[in-house]
Image (cartoon, rainbow over all chains, first blue to last red; front, side, top):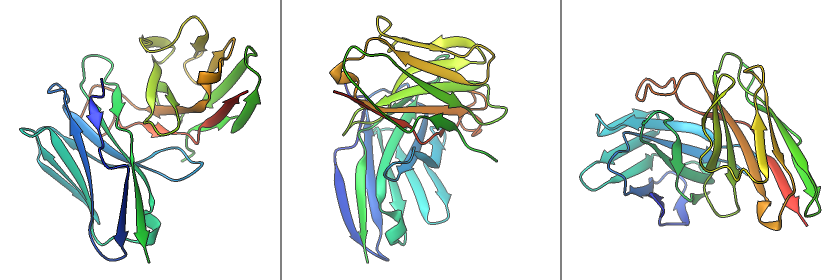
Amino acid sequence: DQQVKQNSPSLSVQEGRISILNCDYTNSMFDYFLWYKKYPAEGPTFLISISSIKDKNEDGRFTVFLNKSAKHLSLHIVPSQPGDSAVYFCAASAGGGTYKYIFGTGTRLKVLA
Amino acid sequence: EAGVAQSPRYKIIEKRQSVAFWCNPISGHATLYWYQQILGQGPKLLIQFQNNGVVDDSQLPKDRFSAERLKGVDSTLKIQPAKLEDSAVYLCASSLEPGTSGSGTDTQYFGPGTRLTVL
């Protein structure tokens, strides 16, 4: 049972435009959400997070939106740059003692120059 | 600040052989995680340590996988014997303190991973 889903395996965007990556979850107990970026042959790098008490968090070019009623979050990158080309993973945490992360399957973003 | 260190970066073994991976977390991080990432999937937690105690090993295949963190700092993950389906990237991550969602202190920081190929 995939509790965190990224239904778009890949996405291509022109440089300077907005990239929108989506993530859906099924477990209503999740209260903390994160986005990680992964380049080839490297480990995932933390990008941005959001607590369930918020509906938006912004950090420079990156904004994460959370819609709890729809169990949906999205990452917006504006403007997109070629260096943003990577695989993006969304992750969710439910607390419960271990606070372990459940990851989605990732979306490969390609920003075209 | 030094990141999470892992070694080796790559390992190729035959099935039924044994293999061990090493991880050194970020200094001061009490919590250490081992993940398995199979090609095309997201990382899956295998085991979580808080200092040198196990917090969660519910998804660790204990008949063949073992992990230890004896002094509460670095950790080793072992597979014995390996199967073809163990081919994956094994990622180590560390964090300051879980359970404080929203504060950022439980954000996990990942090492570069070890790519294991079982032939």
